[in-house]
Length: 122
Image 1 (cartoon, rainbow, N blue to C red):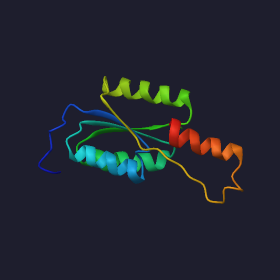
Image 2: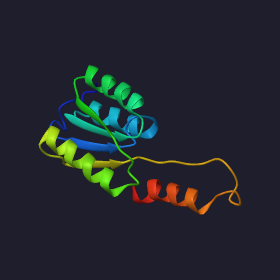
Image 3: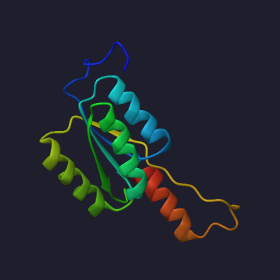
């Protein structure tokens, strides 16, 4: 923890893509800045559980919510779950992203829509 611990002691945030990569790095940085509560949103329960364990070890009230941010119903459920656990939310980090290997010519309309929905809408 840095000398800034407690600076954001009232911050309760959702971090999409928070179980790995940039999203988890942001979650760790928020925790280091004193964020008291984090709801990590992602698709992999296993990765989410590991990320939450790290944050809890550092004293953060953290939960993982399995959801696909490309689906509006999943997003609404995730927010409702986080609100039910923390009571309030006052920060959002949209770090969820996806990609696919292959050429533009090989990209189907369905694959393009999936990538767009996660990276832009999610």
